[in-house]
Image (cartoon, rainbow, N blue to C red; front, side, top):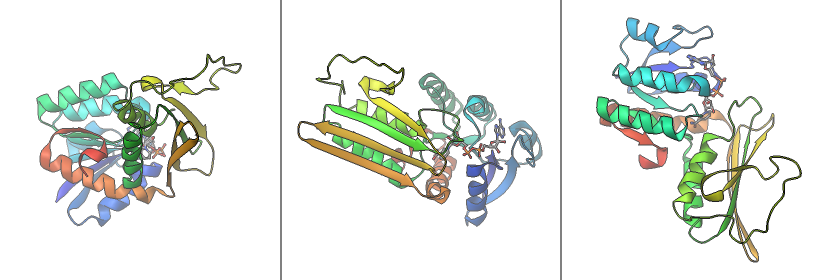
Length: 248
Ligand SMILES: NC(=O)c1ccc[n+]([C@@H]2O[C@H](COP(=O)([O-])OP(=O)(O)OC[C@H]3O[C@@H](n4cnc5c(N)ncnc54)[C@H](O)[C@@H]3O)[C@@H](O)[C@H]2O)c1
């Protein structure tokens, strides 16, 4: 049985993960960690009391780097769902994970449909010189743009060096109107609205045609298959992985 600690166990994602771990035939829940009313308040408290094979983190952008450093420095394999890590932090975690031979799997999106949406967007990027991303989330989401949008843009940028080919000289009369400018000029627009969970559209255009690739998460159960796969992979391989698509 793989001994699991869930960090952020009382949050929206954490509660769903606790349920999924309890239902998994090959896992046992060793600790529920949360700064707010958790069985343990910190990872250190949990580690001092119970054995942990894999920690699953769904906390918040401002805590995730410190949590990951603690795990990798203390031989705890970690599966990271929390978004908001910078490229530099991800590089540092990769180095640390490889040096410590401790597993670290980071996935900005654990839903298989969303991972396919990202792959399809990458494929389409070979054939279009213009593309923009619109991501739509619930209004309690703390970071913008979403980790999924950033990862999608990164994957698309590997296929195309400039995504605003042929645009005229632009002037923003309201700052931010054109969204954030990410890798290779892919513009990302973030919508925050009660009612959404997580949705994303990638829009491609060329003369006379528009291609839209869209994914909608209807509830948080859609992430759980990916989370459990990530745990099994990390426990077995103890390697560094960025993106669920690399283990499917
Ligand atoms: N990768 C994915 O597929 C995916 C899917 C959905 C959400 N997310 C991300 O997961 C994160 C959590 O989302 P949520 O909607 O569950 O948020 P939430 O606010 O509902 O839950 C976060 C929980 O973490 C706890 N927490 C915060 N800092 C902590 C710390 N340092 N130690 C222990 N507990 C801590 C909070 O008390 C809270 O209970 C966000 O970054 C979100 O973007 C990722």
